[in-house]
Image 1: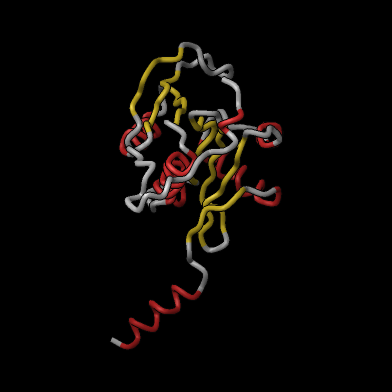
Image 2 (image 1 turned 90 degrees about the vertical axis):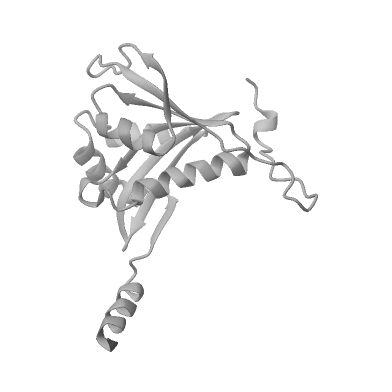
Length: 185
């Protein structure tokens, strides 16, 4: 019994913690490995850099044991987040990393008072459709000839923000998205 407990303590102390953080330049080699392993028509490093240079574009990675397991790139809009790219490396799929990233996006909805998350999924990418559907996303429309690289159609999927009460029960008003107050439609 004592040996089992020791092994468990060692696992915890070896840095196997999982966390989501901002994407930085030195993450690009691992992000590109996950991208290429995940998609037939993958983004190039220039695509990532061009996107991330835009002021409303955010990149985040999920890191486990000091290795990048997945990433997401999304745009901030006044009333929504738009997910541009999302991948979990095939070697660590079905371990909860994707669920954690979706959870992070949902938190950003409620904490920043945005109404929904939108994304486009290739018509042939059934695994992604099922993943997002399992996390509450619903297909809202078909986007004809959406992808320039293949002419393939896409499904637009959305997840509406969970109900949010501006009062937390103690008479204190909840968080306000100050940037969105000044953006134009």
